[in-house]
Length: 394
Image (cartoon, rainbow, N blue to C red):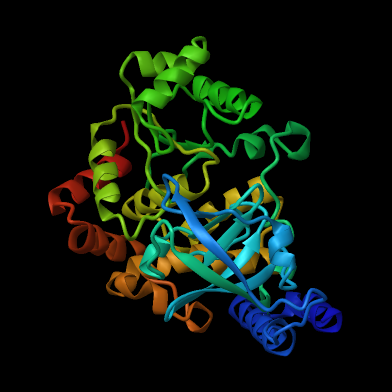
């Protein structure tokens, strides 16, 4: 494996980007076949464990009374794929420490004080039908083909300013400056209330930029109100008291919840002046909704990918055009962009073979316009109003 990666890295400067991505994915496929998916024996002699569904959380994830020692009984550990079976239903899931380093539309099990099972940016109950009280059987498959190549992306996001090269990276904040979007009118960030000291950096940024309106995607009105009471002197708290913060708890399952996207478009059209958009980390929900605005603002396919990629570099320290960066693109950004174009495939997400999909660039303004009108159900005149608002500015 080290020889293969050395060859790739030493020759990467001479390869076209698509060729490099193809080689990386081919290497992963070969390694998965050769090493990852042969059933592994284990010292305990157990081949399976059982677990009962105890509850579902606000995001629809199923919780089991399991800890990592239970998975180790079948020879599985963090970074391994397991098979979860209920009757004639089954899914593959990767065992993770937290909700990061997971490919979009693939199933995970976060193992800590208990085990939480879900699908990244998707409703996994559309993949396997579970109810409280159901007992599933779990067996080991092998090593996940991505995990050993995305070591930075698997880390939980640090809350220590010293771990970041700049205030901008720490707060994951910036002006959205792509396409024909009028400069100094649209901004994005992590939460200006959550995440401890990080919030202070974001709040100061919005104050310095004179942001006049906020769209919050990670908390409803009552939760934001409590945070305002805890931080009454924040600039963003004053915006909230003035009625200039539009907030709700959006779920990071965009394509299967088109009503959320429709609501976001309507909220954006209600804003005045300079607008800031945020969620907890400024990554998933903020990233996707900013994609939509960037597309309607005349950005190119490449600009949208690169703008999203800034967040990957900010939060995880992954440098652009490295092997890990390109893998994250294929695990996340490319998959989301694919579904905007192929929204007829959304009902078929559980059956999509993502590692066989060709991700090709397209005219994003045309594709996103069609997506919003035909799939989400936004009126054409409202889509045009968003375009005008973005391109004409304040």
